[in-house]
Image (cartoon, helix red, strand yellow):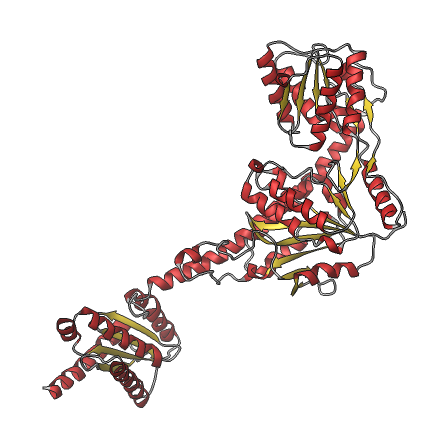
Length: 619
């Protein structure tokens, strides 16, 4: 056609699983585009389950239809008739009638079963209506008891045959199936029960995929000529953009293909050897890709930094053969420490509590790619709209495949693969994305857990009343610092503090008064301790400060500052009695064999001497 058109494809795998939370994350990709920015919209919603029990499909369906309708752009719907949109695809109703005529007139069938797809699927509904209308016009029974409707999968055909056979107790003359997959399932179930197709009954399918041509028996089917969809779609858009009149429906051609499953001689012979050869080569290709995915999965386990993770993801699959690819991620993906609230529950909830979006995307996101010149990871944070619209600067004739990136229902971004439309047909694409997302989520969770463990460890080492380190903090922090300084022959100062007359305050004014006195003392210690000091509540009214070695005057200044702060705070609070502390300090000598406990005892003894002297003065 000669037009340089950029194609933006937003793909989800929500229909591949019944996990509701996973589907929320998958379907959120449809929230990404602003449909008003495009010249035309193609909707293929057949892969979205409309029934809510399949997991949020109904909401995604409604959102897509509504957003496309409100865009004011021409909307083309593939294989689904949707009010207000153009339709491109086969006439499912008309395509089914020649098949019914063939089975009815050529083979004389009057007793039918029907194994069909989901009742809420447009294509399935049209095919069902065609067979019902055809048989009703000829007074042939086609009641509800002859139908089994489930999915378009092989297992649906298998279960459908078993259920209908159990219900009716005898075989029909023909089983009409909604697609080839179902037809294969029917043939499989029949063969396991000792029946033969077409000797015992006829089976027909629909679609003319490989399963129809190379199954035994080959499945009589309807060829949709799907390669015509793209051509018709582009043809329709060009007419619209040129202001030319167009029909609401653009139907593509169909053709019945009569093969072994209805007992007809095939008009076209299949080259089984070529099919096998092609599948052998495909399996070899898939094996190589599986090895790459396994290696990527393994390497992601040992990444230490986000940059390493990004590099493995963007460089780890050479066989993708795309022009370029990049990640666009929520900035919070590297914020392992932030919490949504202040409680422990907020810390432990790794992804939720508003950390990541469940619907839509954040206003600013981080684009991550490989710098073509240096080969290194390149990251830039921009507004989401600017990141998305910047692709329009590229020349036309390109394809951009947008894939959702999420941790269960929590959206963390998306991946863009450029000029890789062939990947849509590759079975390993979903496996690749699952491996990447799982690896990224494991990395994120591990980093978050490391932070949480540090936080929990810190909490366990803190005195609940004062916020100072407790005895466990003394063992883990103060003793660690002492060992490190001993190795470096760096001396420390040890200051032991004891509150005066705490027992008197508890007995006279109550424990609330005593607790307040402890908090006032701890607050003063925290205010005046150097940043590198470790302040500890050793128990009751005893406090310890371990800090880098200070001179005698500096220690005196530190203790006096704490005393002054305690005194001033007591006056401000209108405390019922005087607040004061006794102190003792000592410097370490790392050349001797003494341990920290030894110095603490010596500082305690010096403090006790001061306390005794202060007591004598009061008396």
